[in-house]
Length: 101
Image 1 (spheres, rainbow, N blue to C red):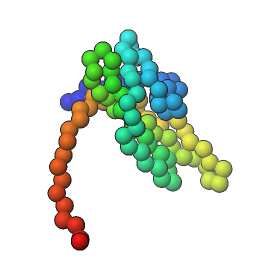
Image 2 (cartoon, rainbow, N blue to C red; image 1 turned 135 degrees about the vertical axis):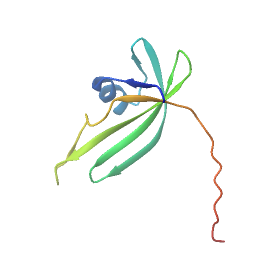
Image 3 (cartoon, rainbow, N blue to C red; image 1 turned 30 degrees about the vertical axis):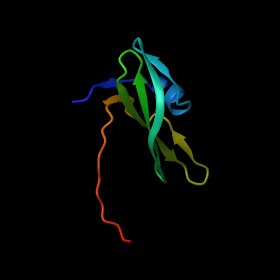
Image 4 (cartoon, rainbow, N blue to C red; image 1 turned 45 degrees about the vertical axis):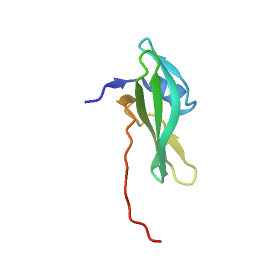
């Protein structure tokens, strides 16, 4: 199973979601690498970010979510997420498809 690190809502809201910034947690420095995925629909939005732990170079991803509420005048609830960093590693896949010519 991958290593999972539970962050606080404050770090997720103030540093990750709104700033895509570097942060320190539990004595470790995590540097923002890139946004790797996002999805937005009528119910809310999800963003997945990649971080690199400075001490050992391991990579972690986190998906932060916001739930949409309201109708014409709507907003998003920030605390709808697990606040978990999950260790990941880069793997390449070769996919063969048949396309119309």
